[in-house]
Image: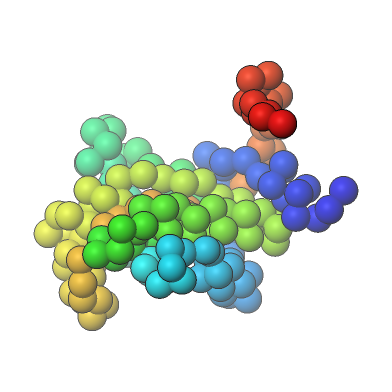
Length: 175
């Protein structure tokens, strides 16, 4: 079977990461793959904020926890040492789709390199808040961006589950 198709079939969300960091070369390769996602009219509306700084990572996790309504001490990123945050320029009519494709590329590229991942939501709420706006300002990012998602990445602390069988009515053919 084609290697790309193997990756697509084997990728699973990881909900328990080791604290071990992802090697810089792998991290850069995953990020590069995100930048090659298709975008509407080729406008490349998304941006990626790569967070490997533990202090900032933990602050973002805490903000995400509060938005999600979980108890204190819960880590919505499941211990992942790195977070790739995807935002997209709201002035583009395709921004949500563009950002979603970037997220898919990030997760599939990670899998292809033996790095595990999970999509974590609430980036929209984070970057609409003063907390998120300050991160953008501190990074010198200007524009009207909406948070699309967090791609938490790292190495699984335990084996991941097998894929569920695909449902029978997933595809309808018109010939």
